[in-house]
Length: 403
Image (cartoon, rainbow, N blue to C red; front, top):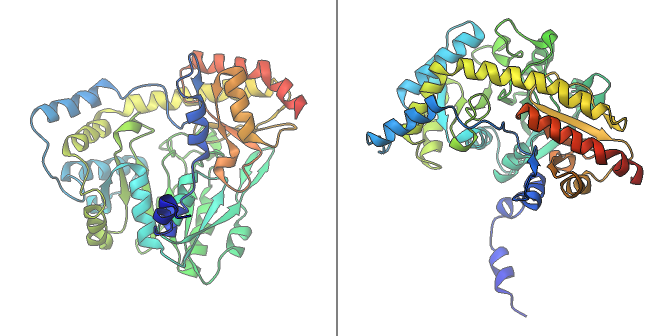
C-alpha cells in the first residue's frame, strides 16, 4: 500500500533524516507546564536579560534600526569583542577575527562546515553537549566519540585515547572546556598536548570556551579569572575555530547572538556562510550586545559568584542522600552525578518529574559514557535550588533501592 508519508521521507537527505533527537527536549516536553515544577534541565539561569541590555535593543528598534546589516557583524560589535578578549587574555586581538552569529549553535554549524564534510570524521570527547555530534552529522561527517573517564576527582580526558582515535579520515576534533555536562577543565598542559596532536595530524580544532568564566577551582584559574584557553598556547597559523555566545554570561539565551572567532584569512568564507544561512544578525540586537560587553561586567561577576555558591549547595545536598556519586565540578554550572543502582537515567528523569516535580536532563542525552548520570543546572535562584535539592533528596533513596 502506498504511503504518502514514507514516499516523502524516502526522498530526503540522510543527514537530515538521521539528525538525532534531543533527549533533553524529550524530558522537558514531558514536564513542561506542570504547576510548581522546578526546571533544572536546560543550561540557563533564572534571571532575565538585564534591563540595561534589553533597553538598548528596544531603543535601537524604536529608532528604526531594522534594515539589512553587515554579514560579518557590525563594526562596533566586532571591535567590542576584540577589546573583551584583550581584557581576558592580556594581549591584542584583531577585530577581523570575529564574526557575529545567530547564537553559538550557528557558529558551531559554520565551524563544522569549514572543517569537515561527507566522509570525514570528527573526534568528540564524551559525555558531551549533544549538539556537537548533531552539528557534525548534519554536514555529512561522522562524529567519533572519545569516552572520558570519571573518577573521584572528576572527569579526565585520556589524551592517548584521543590520539588512538585519529584515522586517515579524521579532519577535526571538538574541545569543550569547561565541559558541558561534566565540568571538566583542560589544563594548559592538556591544551599544549591537544594542539600538538592537531598539528601533527593536520586537524582543525573547534574550541567551545563558552563557560570559561565559570571556574570554581582556584587551581584551574588564570589570573584574569578564566580557565586556560588555546589562546594561551597557540600560534597564528594554528587551525582553531572558537565558538562563543552571549547566552550564558549575560543571560541572553533567547536572543540568539554569538560569535565565531577564526583566522582572518577565512573572512570571505565565513561571510558567505553567514549570507547563505541567516544573512546576518539583526542590527538592534548587535548594538545591545555591544552594551553587554561594555557595561555588563558586574552582572557577569555576580553570575559567577552565584554559580560558585550554588555548586556547594547542590553537591553537598545531593551527597547527603548517600546514594549519589558526585565529584565537585571545577568549571561550568552543572552537577553531573550518578545514582547508585540506577542505570536507566531517562526513566529516572521522568520519575523525578513525577515524584519530585523537578526536571533534570538524562545522561543518555550526552552520548558515550554519560548514560548512567543525570545533569542538574545549578545556575538558579538559590532558594529555588535548595527546594529542588530537598525534593530530590526525599525521593532519591527510594528510587535507588528500587533500582
